[in-house]
Amino acid sequence: MNRKQRAPSPQLFAGSASESKKTKSPLEVEASLQLSAGSFNGRLECAFDSARVTTPAFVVDEGLLRQNLRVFAEVKHRTGCRILLALKAFAMFSVFPLLREVLDGVCASSPHEARLGREEFGGEVHTFAAAYSESDILDLAGTTDHLVFNSFNQLTRFRGLALQTARSSGRNLQIGLRINPEHSEGAVPIYDPCAPGSRLGVRRRAFREDLLDQVTGLHWHNLCEQNADCLERTIGAVEASFGPFLDRMEYVNFGGGHHITREDYDRRLLIELINRFQDKWSTSVYLEPGEAVALNAGYLVSTVLDIVSADMDIAIIDSSVPAHMPDVLEMPYRPHIIGSGEPGEKSYTCRIGGLSCLAGDVAGEYSFDRPLQIGDRLVFTDMAIYTMVKTNTFNGVQLPGIYLYRPERDEMVSIRVFGYNDFKTRLS
Ligand SMILES: Cc1ncc(COP(=O)(O)O)c(C=O)c1O
Image (cartoon, rainbow, N blue to C red; front, top):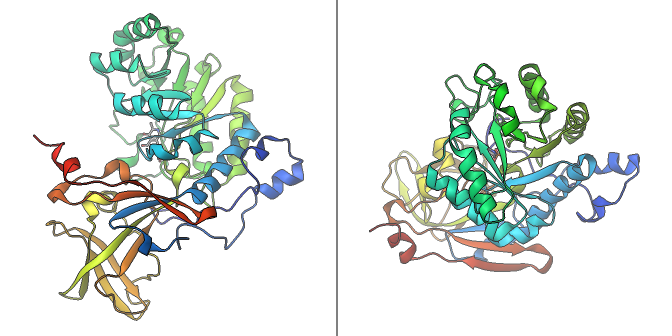
């Protein structure tokens, strides 16, 4: 599936996360793994009135987050694996207490993310970066539980310092190593860590078996919005190259990119793969999804400020594509707007553009049942992931406020409002 052409969220596993920890009969499990077609999902609609927020605004629906969490709870229950939130995708720490009910901790990519995980999430903090400086190591030794190196150079240079620093403050630190399975599953090259020339992970030919006793876990990451069949082939590639080392590891981390909460994701296969791997190699498995945790659980609400006429009508909104949803340009992809159709599908077609100076600040072309008007609200879907963590203030544009919607109480909570100081304090 192409990035961002996402299927609806699943409505799975009736019952709470804690209920799912009870043993279920095979039939109950079978039922719980079935998808309910046509259920409410965050991709096509939203449960709240968009007029309730000050725009631009990110709104995360707690009910949709819970739906996703139930899926993870079931996978954990069926496998005993541990699941971490990849902070790079979603770091809205006001919902960490909720996520913590099911997820085991976070995976971080930097000292800052690791500290956020330590301070706000609790549980396990795993950190991986393509390279660390000495000051990174000193910092991470105080926040991280599992420090994953990207090369044997970095491992031999910093392992001692990291362990000694952690020990001196009474912390137990474990060391991991990222491998490169050299197995691509067709992701867009900039999102494919196994693309030719990738700097990510140690390849088999550079692997140092003589240093293996210095690490307790291996880690790989090669998927991007992919299904369990891609994981199955990846495991095959890893076993073919790194098989001799796997049963010497306390854990193996399958990375992120597993679109576990997507409707068409094959969760039965995932569960089977994890169980088989753990049994075969006497090790335990970690997953560290980012997207799947908050997939289809958030929105970006904007207001039409003006309609200008060019080759076609262009609605200019109080949001900016490069500043608020940069993946739309980076990927690129066309985000969905609630109530819209493809160009020409509905009676009024127009282009939607942002308010910055960038000529390419355009979300795409859409059709609507009636001409857009100044003041209309447009709600972009699937905007919780890789958005809040990537926003910038290019042109000094207003950062979207952050709201949490609680569907059971129909409550819209304003979590954070940004202003001039947030722009100014990043400059000097
Ligand atoms: C090492 C690592 N782990 C986890 C993730 C999270 O991936 P996703 O958000 O696609 O699940 C990424 C994404 O780039 C990653 O690089």
